[in-house]
Image (cartoon, rainbow, N blue to C red):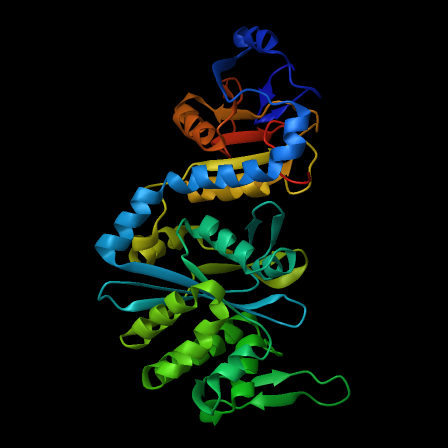
Length: 402
């Protein structure tokens, strides 16, 4: 290996410890911190699944005290509500949170939000549920916003309509019009405040129609406001909705009931329109506005104080989804994943954690604490200005295909 350049090594195999020590004069310093050692291949084959759980447990313990303090002092709680269509594609996302006696917040997140889906790459949030289900959507938003999300309420086609059960007054600023394959466009829901059937209410929430994304989000906001008002007067509605939270149904019922009993602020995540992958109506988080938004609206959910270290994770062992569990663990520990990709080779026996400059050495050491094994390298010659820490996942992290 000649040297480490922005976290990617230039040779196909990991050099020996003594070989790496000889690179000090070239600007790359090896910090002799090897945690856990390199494990033999049979162990990897037999225990990769077990170790994945170990990694998650290790990462979960790191911020746990902070999270428990948040919940105790602020009485904070949060839940991601996800609606999917027949193809399992996410069509509506809303992050519900509350703390103590403060007004609850319902943050609408566009399905066309483009960001890193940890372990997969850059895709719209809608694809998260196709790849892996609502759990990946939760992890993605935790990474984007730097907040914890306690529960998931996942609603499939027909679930919302069945829970509502009767007509609901919904105030629309613009009509919902959908294209018909064999005829003129169909007006599904007219503008104005009108009683809507449960099926139409669900359609308004989950169907973009012929309008732009922002108009769709406005209609979604109208539905959520109507639903929150309905839950205040119909406690059984919360039970019917929360039934789709699985094992967390009792907790979900409590969150919905406490939310409906007070003031609810329905708002949109600060985003800017972008053209992504040929789609005109895509969005990215508005970086300038998002930090203040999260601090003021979701501050009781923050996973870390201040700026989160930026991390890239590179697959150096060739296993599919090898970066997924690593990304999840680091996000929970307060890091921000900004890139996942393949390394220059799949022949790395030992994982490498590269601090991109001396000022990020402490961040890299924290990464090693989460991983529980690997070696730490310090890049001084050409540190990246895009990421703070680079990780090459080797054979010693048995994650991905067995």
